[in-house]
Image 1 (cartoon, rainbow, N blue to C red):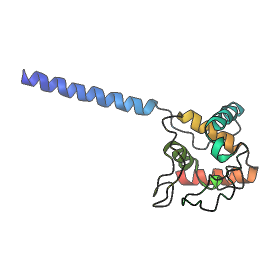
Image 2: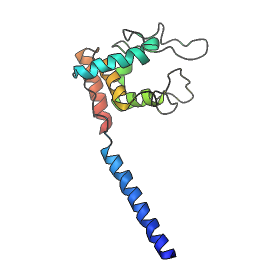
Image 3: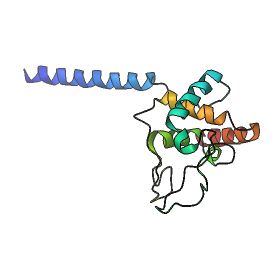
Image 4: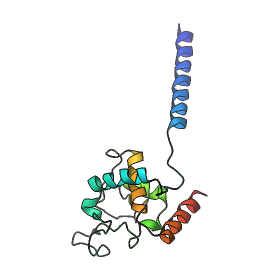
Length: 157
């Protein structure tokens, strides 16, 4: 009886391991570079942005005024996501992480940094986050978009 339980236990572990491996390979990984030329994705992103991001980052991606100057609470206002901000300086993987997990000190923000940026990982799907970034990028001029593409692809190598 003990040997039978051991065999069933091993079989169970193998099945769970195989299921986890299959799940991992079936999950869609984010694209290497989020390309804003997909107008369907951009339009989806515009709606998600309007509902989740515009209140802080502005309806026109302009950010909050004086976004480089700390508020009395020590936090920085929401930056713009148009070409005047610094969003385009970051690779796509980092931008996805920032939206999903908020600004994490020592990872996507300086150590000790406290931000009002919420984590949207439970509220937005990966596809929604990618769509928002496609929408944001669709406003950038070609030179800015190309520079961000280079940063993104360089970080993958």
